[in-house]
Amino acid sequence: MPELSSRTYPVARADLVAYAAASGDPNPIHQDPEIARSVGLPDVIAHGMFTLALAARYVDEELGEPGRIAELGAKFTRPVVVPEEGTSVEISGEWRDERTIALTVTCAGEKVLGNPVAVLRA
Amino acid sequence: MVDSSLAGRSFPPTSPFGVTADHVAAFAAASGTPYQPGDPAPATYPIVVAFTAMQELMVDPTVGIKLHNVVHGQQKFVHERPVRVGDRLVAELTVTSLRQVAGTDIIATSSRITDEAGELVCVADATLVHKES
Image 1 (cartoon, each protein chain N blue to C red):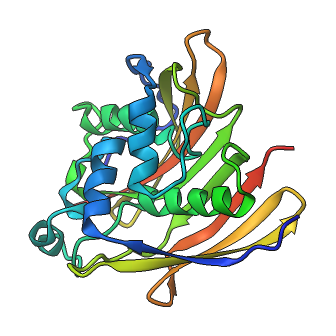
Image 2: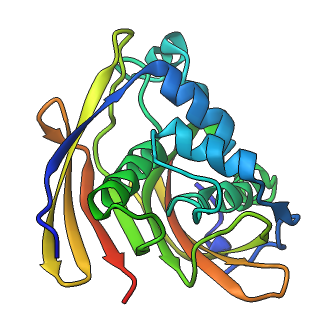
């Protein structure tokens, strides 16, 4: 089992626009600051699924090969707020057993995913 | 609040979705995920078809969800195999449970994603949190 590092991923609003188009989720709270504020959010927020996609990216990059993830799940506990200048998400992992990686996913020092776990193929 | 009879309800399968190399590449690129042609799709890629199934639940007038009051609470993927370019995927969504607490509907869904042969590719479980406006 390789030692797992900590990685920082910058998040820009343009990434959310690209993710919205590719995933088919047009919800404007992920793109339009005025609409986000109108529903009580501080600013545009990332799709929860965008953040979970970063968690999958982290596992792929740490393992150096795609397609190893058999299970991946998390609770979306706190929004990733993306101001005009962008933000970043920090991800680290810890082996729970030889197939299971417990992840820690934070933004601005706060955990944004609850119990994010990836289980690898045997 | 949605009607409590929603629990246990299954929705018709989505239209088959053809997985193309360009679409997988665009999905991977949006999160900066390394992707080379021929690679399996990223682990969260099945959300594309699961999301279509969830949209059909959310816009169904007999369900009574107000789209702007829904947030994604939880997501889990259990893959039978990775998605590959050329797959034609269909999602069938079932509402596995409904909890109604203080003006909030907590709707647990499970979407079975199958290929053109009817073989299971992935189960995508999503919890949708619907607040009364």
